[in-house]
Length: 315
Image (tube, helix red, strand yellow):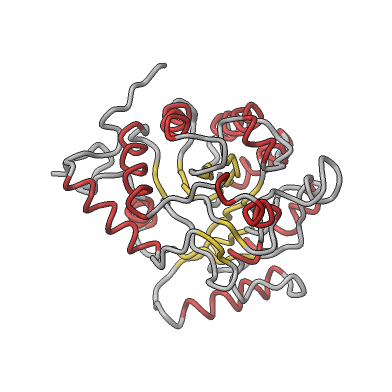
C-alpha cells in the first residue's frame, strides 16, 4: 500500500507517475511554434516582452515557424518514435501566448494538430490575460473528447514583481484564469519563478500557501535564470547584487520547504528549468533536471518530510 495520498511511495505528487497511471503508458509532448506573439511584445500592453524571456531557451530544433503545425508534428513524432516504440503524443503549443488570436484562428490551428491520428490532446501555453470565456468554452468542448491542458505563466503572486518583469497582467487575473479553467474541468498548469529580485524566502513560502488555496492542478517551478539577450541580462550586468542567485544547496532547501507547505493535491511537473549552455548566463549549476530531482528526493528522505506535511487548508 502506498504511503502518501497521491498513491505512490514518492515523497511528492510527481507528474510522470500521474501521467503514466492516467494514460497507462508513455506520453510525449511535441512542441509547436504556431507563430503567436504576446500582448507585452506587440504593443497592446507593452513592448519588449517579459524581462527574463528568450524564447530560444525552450524551443526544440524541429519547431520552425516556417513549417505548418502538421509538419512540425510529423517531424517531432519521427524524432521520438525512433527512441520509443509505443507512445502517445500531445501537441504542445509552447512559444509565446498560444491563445492570443481570434477564436477562429485558434480553432484552425488546434484542430489541425488534433487531426493527427497519434495526437490525443493539446497542451497550450499562454498568459492569464490571454484567455476569454469564449476561448475557454471552446476548450471545454474539446476536452470532452481530448486531453486539454492550459499552462499559465503566473510567475509570481506579487504584483510589484509582475510589474518589474514587464508582464502586463496582475496576479488577480491569474486567479480569475485558474478559477475559470477549474469551473470548466479543463486541466491547468501554473508556472512560477523562485528567486525573483526584490522577493525573499518568506515571499516564496507565502506563495506556496497562496497557490495551495487555488484550483491549480499541475505546477512547474523555475529557479530564476539569466538568459543572454534579455532585458534582465542587461540589468544583471549593471547590478549583480540585485540578483542573488541560488546555489544548488540553497535551492534544494527552498524546494523542500515549499513542498512541505504545498497542497498535496497539486501535481508537481518540475522544479528546475534547463537552458542551452550558449544562452545561459547564471546560475550555471551543470545539472540536468533529473539529477536535481534525484538530489531533492534524497533530501526529502533525509529530512523525513513530504509534500503537504505542513499544508493548511483555509477553505
